[in-house]
Length: 414
Image (cartoon, rainbow, N blue to C red; front, side):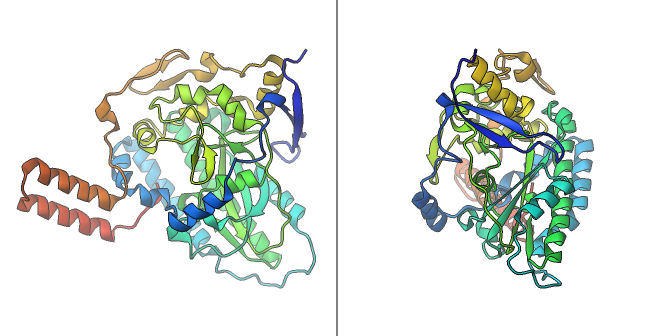
């Protein structure tokens, strides 16, 4: 007999086009509101008064440090990845300026036709919502053109993901984005052929945080690891959007039970090697969410193959939402919690950690470059001057040289 009373059941299409639908049972005690708890007026305020910038600009100081942590083989892999991605980024960046070759057929509803086409191309999840301009990064505000967002999710290889953190999992991570970038450009071509504009927002040069729009499109909810937890793939789904002027019927946010489930689970919070995840949600820029400490997270990510342990140990990622929620309804327990199968992981220079152990790091471990590259250059110059209690010509020359280099060096996605 089930321990928990079922409040509602969410029916979702299978992971692939010919898979059967899944039935996700949401227990009464983890029911909350669809989507993410939001104070719309606060989101608008922060967008207006304190707009966000892209991560690779806001945190540009750590790029060179990040590359210095790579092995020689992975450095070569990253170089090849960026070479392969370059035409995809250019195609995406220019896509909004392309005009359709024909006029659209009036009054035709393409919503389900487009959903089917995207799934046939290989996308695992497809949803439609309004592109929320309030989340647009400062550097992309003039770039975004069209009002409707097509939210597209593609699966990262399951087996490779379970090896996190490793170069194998990083290959899967970057490889999935390459594949997704190509598929998005294909879908954009299809939209153009129907008489509408299509602007591809590549993940590596993103226009905004995409999770709020994926949530609004009913494709998942925000997890305690700061990632979208989708029905089939958990946080293993890689995200990309296309904006268009094609009229589309919007999907609606869904309560999968994640808002409260994560509070009961907490596996990612407890297993995070850097203790970068918060155990309780907070209100941040008008949204209630579990806040990630970027500095602590990045220090481990950079040194340990992108880390991703919070992804690896998430039961929704490992087992799928249907199985996890079935188990919770039947037993009142979190599937896999406390087991080495779910919670165990290895770090390359520290060995294996079972569900009851975690690595320890010295305080200096977390001293990595912070903020923009300009602020970091000035911070180093200031520290040298304060330590010596005077400005030496050598320090001034170094500061000037570093500043000139950074000013003419483009901000590159990492």
